[in-house]
Amino acid sequence: MATLKDLRTRIDSVTQTQKITSAMKMVAASKLRRAQESAEAARPYAQRMERMVGSLAELLQDRDDAPVLLRGNGADKTHLIVVATSDRGLCGGFNSSITRATRLRIRQLTSDGKTVKIFCIGRKGREQLSREFGSLIIGSAAEVGKRGPSYDEADTIGQTITDLFEQGEFDICTVVYNHFKSVMTQIVTFQQVIPFADSAPDAANDDEAEQIDHGGAIYEFEPEEAEILEELLPYNLSIQVFRALLESAASEQGARMTAMDSATRNAGEMIDKLTLNFNRTRQAKITGELIEIISGAEAT
Amino acid sequence: MADTFQFELVAPEKLIFSDDIEFVVVPGAEGDFGVLPGHALLLSTVRPGIIEIHENDKPKERFFVGGGFAEVTPERCTVLSTESVNLAEIDESAARARLDTAERDLNDAASDGEREKAEKALEVAQALVAACS
Image (cartoon, rainbow over all chains, first blue to last red; front, side, top):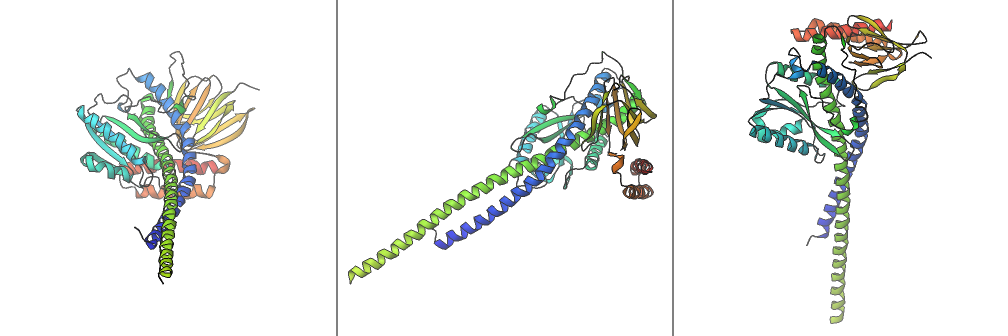
């Protein structure tokens, strides 16, 4: 049986923890609002970009001189998986759901006889993946988007990926990130970026996704289409990475807020239980003492 | 009211401008081009410069763009820019400071890749300063 002092210490410590978790929840909530706004503000760009590249891809898909970033290098032997996670923990299942999905994908690809390489964004993903696949990690970036991801950071990562592709390090590149659906729900999304795949990853795109048919009319290009594509495709890659980073940042804050909210609630429940226990023990002690006094008085 | 078409100017961070307009001038890589409703399909790179939106044959709004891509279809014109600001909101001293940094970066550039990057940044900064005056 715990003594009164032990119980009081525990109640105090849980109260302290509750204070911390509820403060973290507040911080996450305010960061979330900002992250969510910028993620949603960036969606139009990525969508229009996708539309533009999509219509170009359609135009050029049958031609042999299409840039390799667009049609791929014909092989699918080596896969690069870019994993977007957070730098910090205490955000519920945010990082583990990403790494779990990634692990499954890696196992599946390996059993199909493919080679897998990993590029980690965020410290947590690297920690969790290096246990099992440490040898596959070819690069990583940490401390990305500490104050909200910026396009420059995404561009740096995008360029790294393009360089790796040009060096023949991999054939197919997929980005894994948590798509921000709502504060409670984040969807693990795999998006193939090299070669370009026209994929609308979320239902939110539907209202924007209008089918355009120009009756086979040909675009005029200024300057040459090869030149445009050469610039457009790496740029598109950076934009897609940027989008993934923004979505991931918003999801992280959402996940953290939910996690801290339930932690605060759990701490509250625990305090209630401990307080009840504390009062019971106190009463039992008082009763015991009373019995002692009464029986002492009766004996005389 | 004359015919209009949808014009959208997007920066990576957000949608800057989206409305039905009559006429717009876009600084294409190979020269400025004007877009009216019913323009032929065109895809062009955009150089750093000024986008001018006209209404009733008069310039209505002006935006600085730091480069990007423009897609023109008969009923729509979309400019995907690397960065873009309303000309009225540009801070001239900040623009000059940026020009200085870009020049310094170019001088300090060690590798070809860095130099290329610095040259691009310088070009954007020069256009920005030019846009202020």
